[in-house]
Length: 333
Image 1 (spheres, helix red, strand yellow):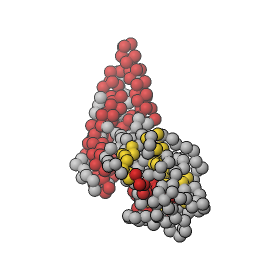
Image 2: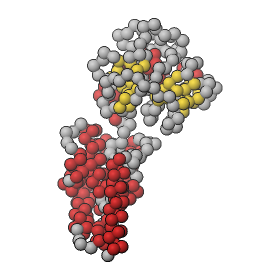
Image 3: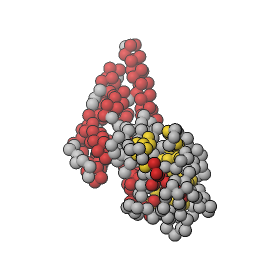
Image 4: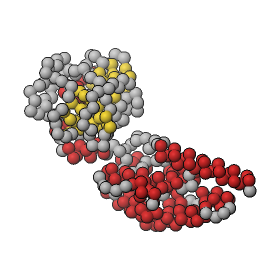
């Protein structure tokens, strides 16, 4: 970082961006992190702080959730004009007709409303790219910033812009292999049904399919083969890393071990139920999860694992209850 530039760091994820001082207004500004979507205030004389504000709702972008941020002061030296619009920004001046009617969407998160100059400041500072989505009041749908504004760089179609937003999300369920193994044992393989459900849900949302992932997870023994084949044959994943696992072999092994575990657990002995928890059906999913993780780490460096969601917690709680009942049964035998 040189004396004529300053480093802005997102207080939420630590993402850093070096911005020329000439592109920074002297007043405090607000920016949207291009990595995590967090909105924060920045004062070149003080530093960063999280200051999200509420704003009116707008039409949601594809796959997005509204995240509101406040107004940005004008940036100096912005000379970019919107198509079919006579307004222009000059150093330190704002057009009297400017109104806050622009919204942006990045990584599936929405922010706004902004004035035109506020959107352009974030673009010139490097917080927005030409492929990020933008919508103005009166527009029928979201379009890329490169399409809405005359900005330097690539101008992509709305379809390409939507794909860019999707590129920031994992293709399938991204969890540590250790979590898969732990929750499978603790929950008596209930988590494996959740794993099938969650991956089908990723497929549904990414490919816009009409199906019910819940029932595909519930009847996982009938849908495991098709899921593993889809993961194995996914073109986008293959463009990053070629798979080395056998979908048919692993799916068949998983089905056999799940059925075996259910049969053993039905035995009248409590100890048989304990043994059923350790029948390693999860081992057939480990190579698949390892492949998903490798693809995600190559495709989305630094992306955090999928959080401990309510589904994970439910599987954990159910497993703990079952284990407690089994231990009580063993003590009373």
